[in-house]
Length: 51
Image (tube, rainbow, N blue to C red; front, side):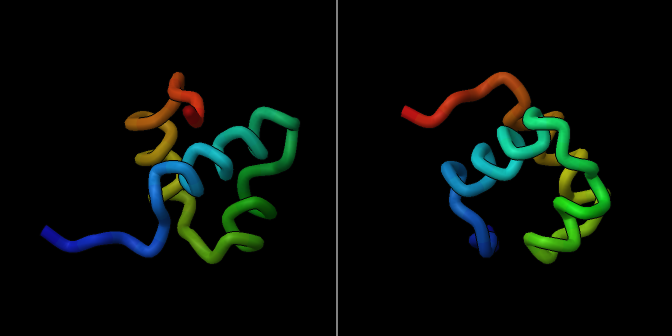
């Protein structure tokens, strides 16, 4: 299985940034991901927190 560029901790960090009312398009551009990737991450890691 292919390993991604971002760890789970980084992914959750991006999602937490979105919770601070940052626009999705600007956030995706900043981190170099597509909107589809962001929404896939949100579906998978939406309620998680970093331990």
